[in-house]
Length: 268
Image (tube, rainbow, N blue to C red; front, side, top):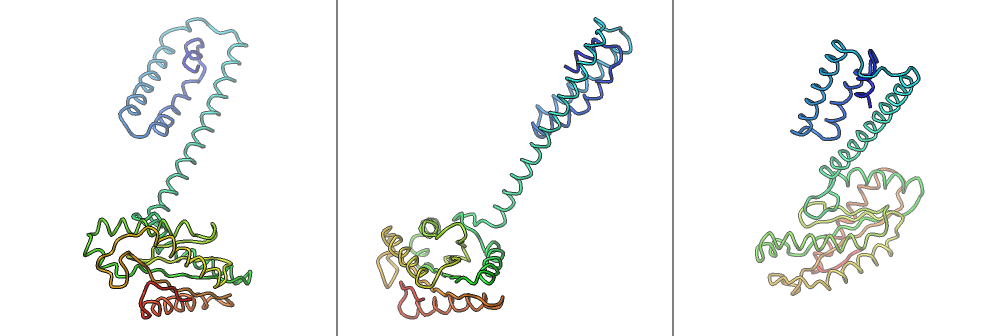
């Protein structure tokens, strides 16, 4: 429409809008051959129009009322274009932020959160528990004799086992306010907000039952023919910030106790 307006007017100033075109092309198409070609074509078209205006009269001079209509249409299109480009840039920015979060807070193997996310979430969950005076439960899971499993079956099957275990854990998350984290190796942590010790224990028992039904063979385990896990649980209604480190220490102690008692156990 700008091109037609320019060819039918002596001096419209519409060629200024062609400066917007390369920005739009590169934003919508990205840096590739098609975008470069389209930008180059726009430049040639702009130079051609300027040359035409300087050397030729309008093809068919517009009536004054049509000139005003052309300006209204052009301004409207430019405004809509800028609006669309702004939306597109914001959409790209949002997607990039999500990818950044995914790259820094998601464990690439299992798809659950990693330790970085744990540090951020645990602080917020703890502060929320203090302000609402609700119980906060922390569960630490550790696959039994997992090094022996890797030695027997190889790391690819070991990775598959971790993925299956994390899937069972995720299925048993209480709600969106809770979180599952791969803390390192075969160790996973679940933080359950507003959850009593008894509730946390029931969830862990359900996970144990669900995981056992998978019957993932483990010939090197001295305690069972399939892969099992040990779990330590701790719960408190925190009064101050220091209580969270105590909560983790208590859950870790209970995990150690579960292993000491023969593994494949839950200690709360």
